[in-house]
Length: 211
Image (cartoon, rainbow, N blue to C red; front, side):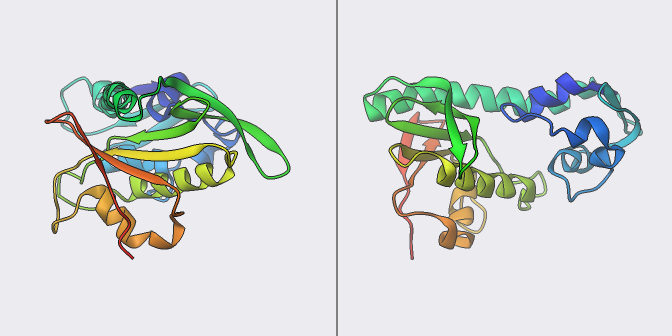
C-alpha cells in the first residue's frame, strides 16, 4: 500500500509532519517509539520503502481488503465525533463554536496552533479513543492526551479549556478518560473542564477529578 505524505497528514490532522519527515529516513523507521509508525505496526504492517517528501510503502502479508481504508477509519471516526461534540457542546455551553480555532501558543516565541473547537471564550480538544481490540491500553493515544494538556498550558490564560472524550467501554470499571485521569492527576490543572460524551444517549457527562 502506498501512503503519500498528504495521506499521512490527513490521518494525523490537525497536526502536520515535522520537517525531519522530509529530511531524515529514520523518521519513518519501523519503531513503536514513534506515534506515527506505531499506528501501522499495531495494525500488522511494516514500512518497506520510503521516498523522502513523497510517499511510503507499507506491506502486510495475507491482507486482502483496501488497506488505506483501515488507516483512514480513525480519521473519519474522529471527524464524526467532532461534529457530534460540536452540536452537543453548543447546547451545553449555550455558545456557538467554530472548528479549528486558531490561537498563538508558546512561551517567548509564539506559534499558531489549531484546537478542534473554540470561540472567544473556550478552547476545546475532542478525542474519540477506545481500548485496543485486545482490550489493552492505547499507549500512543495516552501520550497524545498528555500533549494536549501541554498545548492547553501554552495557550492564552483568558480561555477556558475543555477536554472532551467519547465515553469508551469499561475496562476494570474505568473508561479511557478515567484511566488517564488516575495516572496523570499531577498534570491536570484544577480549572480544566473534563467531559465525556455518551454517544448512544447523546449526553454530556462532566467528570470530577478524584484526588
